[in-house]
Each structure stands twice: as structure tokens, then as C-alpha cells.
Image 1 (cartoon, rainbow, N blue to C red):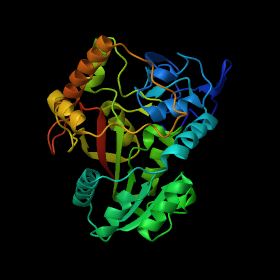
Image 2 (spheres, protein in one colour):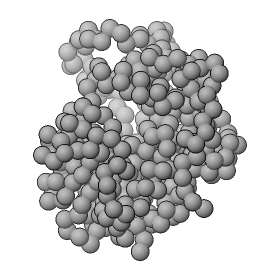
Image 3 (cartoon, protein in one colour):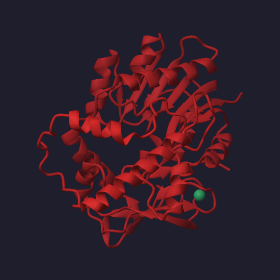
Length: 353
Ligand SMILES: [Zn+2]
């Protein structure tokens, strides 16, 4: 069966929310779904930047929902934000935040682990890598330090320019399909924290696979709505913390196995292992909070305030977060292990042939 993105073919505008549309499943085109969760009102969104971006949109409380396709298992937002609404969301957030956060040293360590694993699968010592959605270019910078040939595409103009300066080579501002790569011409393609943000992830997966040489490696990470934390949340009647306004799509291990096989890719490693994971420690957090300087007054007064919560409720909520954090950390597995129970999945897949 040919793989293509069904959801962008004929979205139906929502009559009562101009920023929302109803779509069919992006993978199979089906519309039989199991409801999973509802996006909370703006003042209940946990991240200030999400409250800021969501405040720029027009939709009613309860209108944005998350569901699972009963035919193929893909999990997605539906009704979801329109293309225009998504653009407005990011414009609002980036206007404040800047296009790229600082690259911490632990991120560099993690990135090098990704690169090590890619290198171990390749027969060529100095591959050509395309990073789709390369942000400010930090991943490509570390690949370049290994002597790899690097290309990047990025939808944010500010980030693309920053990446170009860092790498000393132009980064394409726009869609990677416009870059003119011949089919089967690249050794490595990476999609780091990208697929879940896209409106048409199936098209991107198909077109990425087509650009890989036989033996080439596709590496990506996605949120996993089949994690232990997800299951515990369902069991206790809570919304999974992974369902957020920025993420239109969520991918289970079973879905990815089927989908990548159809695209001619063999999964070499699928793992939810997170090198920075650690068990929660309330005492350590308390000490850190005491040692920290008082938080500066927010410099962004237009961010909507979070809904006030009473102290007992706040303590209960904090205890619940610690429980979920512990489950999440325990579910991620150990280095090199193939646990797929964590909240994020990291996949290294190799093109057949
Ligand atoms: Zn489906």
C-alpha cells in the first residue's frame, strides 16, 4: 500500500473554532478513533510558553482532543490546529524566546551517543548527513567535527541563519524536498524532535526514506503513547503529560515497526533509553530551590498566568509528578538496552537493499 499523508488532503474546518480543523488519520486515512484526552484550557497548560502561544489562538476549551486510530494505531491531535494557527503559535513563541535555546553540555554528550550509533551502522567513514529541522545546527556541528559532510533544512529563518553561521555552510530555510537531492543519494537522515510537530509526518517519513542510499540510516525520536507513564496515567484517570499543544502526532513501537517496514527500512535499534535520566529526589530539589537565587520577575508580562492552585492541591500534584517521574525514569531502560516503555522512542533504521 502506498504511504502518503492523508490528513492534509481534505481537512474539514471546524465551524465554531476558526483555528481548528478535523482530519482523517495521516497514515491510513481512517476516521474510526478512540478518544484519549482533551487539551486543557490555556491557564492550565503547564509551560508558560505554551500558554503564551495558545493565547494567540481561537479555540474553545475542550475542542482540541487527542485520539488513537482504531485501524492503524497512530495517535494524533483531532480536531487539530490549522496550518495558519500552527504558524501563529510558533511566531508568538519565537518572538519572545528566540529561535534556539542554549545547547547544554549534556545535550552534546547525548548527541555524540546518537552519532556513535549511526556510525556503527554505516560502511562509509565520512558520510553525508541531512538533518531535517536542524534548529540552530548543534547536531550537525558535532557531525561536522567528525569529518562528516553536513546539510540542514530548517523552517525557522532565524534558526536557519544561526545554523549557517555555526556550520560555515548555508542551511536551507524551507522544506528539505526543495533542496534538490537525488533519490538514494544520502548516507544519513536525522529528524530530531521533528515528526511529532509536522502536519504530514507520513509524507516526510516516505520522502526521507527515498533519499537514503541502500544501507543508509534514518535516525529520529518521537513521543511514545504506549509508555509506562502513559498507561499509569490512563489507569488513574489522568491526562498523560506527553499530550501537549505543540505535538500533533504520537507513535507507538508497534506502529513504527509496521510503518518503517513498509518504507523499506529495517529497525536496528529502538530504545527509550535516556542518558540523562535519574530518579526524582524531593530532598535534592528542595535544597536546590533553597540555594537558588529568587526568580527574577518575568520579562514577558503578556504570558497568561497559570490558574492558582491551593496549597494542599499543589502538594498532591507535586507528589503525583514525583510518582510519574519515577515511573518514567524506571521505564527508560539501561544503556544499549531495547526498552521501549519510556515516554520517548529513539529509532535507528537502515534502508534495505
Ligand atoms: Zn490510521
